Length: 220
Image (cartoon, rainbow, N blue to C red):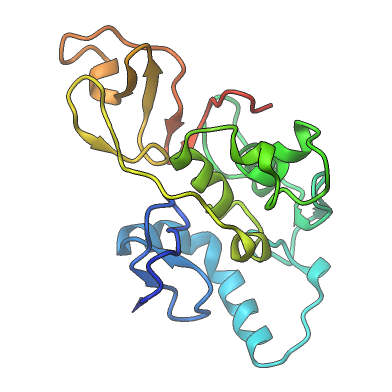
């Protein structure tokens, strides 16, 4: 993992400012080695494809999944942006909140598909003003730059800046896109507080579990 001077880039896992990038392809950014390791299982195939493209090799865009790089499984076009992705909805186990399905991840956790589902005007979610005003800045930055997006959209994105969130009960800093939390009347609550371990009442509307939000206002 090589150090990056481009501090405005966002980590592909949490959207916090990146401090390094993939040393193989140079395209994907991370805030820590931990998050690079988290992303590697899906990124490793794409990394090789990006390196081949950087050397001038032609790689047909419809020959691999644009999110994980697989070439040996069924592929399909997304409804929102017509790009190639794994046809793998069957990989998702109901109520597991896992991220095993490339197709489902893109459909549920990206600005691209949110723009499509909300029927906002125009075909480009990256420049959509209505999308920009739909969610907290930290959540919006993640929806624009996480690794469930296609790389060309990530490179065009201008994610909003944001201040790290704090639990409204215990004031502990938390990453909204990587930690289980809720949103109550007083603001965000961390998993410990919403479970009542500090004398608080568990809140509803859990937003993140296993590294991805599971319930967002306005998401379909």
